[in-house]
Amino acid sequence: MTTLDPQAILAGRTPGRPSIKLMVGMVVTSLCALTALVLFALLGGGANFFVCVGLAVLPVPIMVAAVLLLDRLEPEPTRDLVFAFLWGAGVAVLGALVLNTLGLKYVTEPVFGDQGRFWTTVAGAPVVEEALKGAVLFVLLWFRRNEIDGVTDGFVYAAMVALGFAMMENVSYYLQALDGGGTQRLEAVFVLRGVVAPFCHPLFTAMTGLGVAYAANRRTGRVTALVLGLLAAMLLHALWNAGTLMGAGGLAVVYALNFVLLVVLLTLVFLERRTLVRQIGHYLPGYLHTGLVTPQDIVMLGRIPLRREARRWARSIGGKGAARAMSDYQLAATELVLLHRRMDNGVIDVPFFARRRGELLRLMVVARQALAISRIPAGPAAPPPWGPSGFAPPPG
Image 1 (cartoon, rainbow, N blue to C red):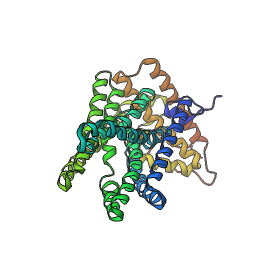
Image 2 (image 1 turned 90 degrees about the vertical axis):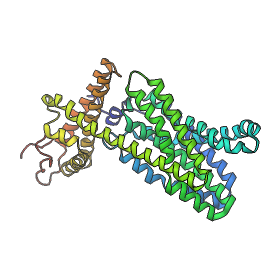
Image 3 (image 1 turned 30 degrees about the vertical axis):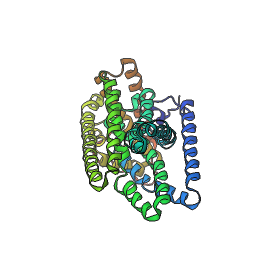
């Protein structure tokens, strides 16, 4: 009997070790990030560098946790998220450092003279940086299209690459602040970039993420969506950079615009979650005859608190292994719903649908079997708290 690799099935990849392409990508992006840090260290030197790195890292765990909180129904593969973050912190930052410097020296300064730095900040940098950040989203669209199921996934991947980029960029900004105005200047820059507006870079790149999400889930208008998404990211970034140069009033206006757009984007994410819950109730009843789900299980799968309660119940009857099996079951069922949606949208063919559905159903079967044999000997197991379910252990 072949041993299942649940994580590979859920991630839609070939079981076994990570692909060579992913491993090479991880190495390259990490080396780029280290190179950028070395350059910043040479720029700042001494203790200032470590202080600035600490301040740049400080908001990142909070922001990453907030982003992942939006993606609880169908979490993205960890290795893909890490790759996106490292791309932002490595390839995008190092590429932007080189291209922005060259653009300033050979384009904007020769053309605009004393205004060259202004035009690099307002026009050059947004184009370069959003193109470099967006590039990894295009890579994911090409190689991992089936992992991008909608607005939420596009936003999550965009936010991860942007958070990596912002973290490294902030090291540079904080070093420049210390060099140009001491600790008071550093405090002001940290409050702006690390406290007041840490969501700006994720918001800019989220526009590209929306275009990528549309292209991954529709058959027409893909190129238009990608171009418009990237242009919107560049425009928002340019407006923000211009606002920072126009005093408190200009910055306040641009900040308000960004905040409104963030609320709109989060609203789209929550509406998409509600749609997914409805689709769970639409597609999964077709599998009632298989015994893999009951009506009560469908209710549980559509509510995050009940999913969490189900994992706690599984742990109570069978420990960590049972909790892992319950998690695999929940994610496989959700992936099955998303697979049906992609089939209805016409973005996958019948052979792929059949193969992928078979993998997910097999994982659901194995997860149920794991729950059936995982028992804590001490005392009878409690029934599932969400009602009659195929997960309930047999009496006695």
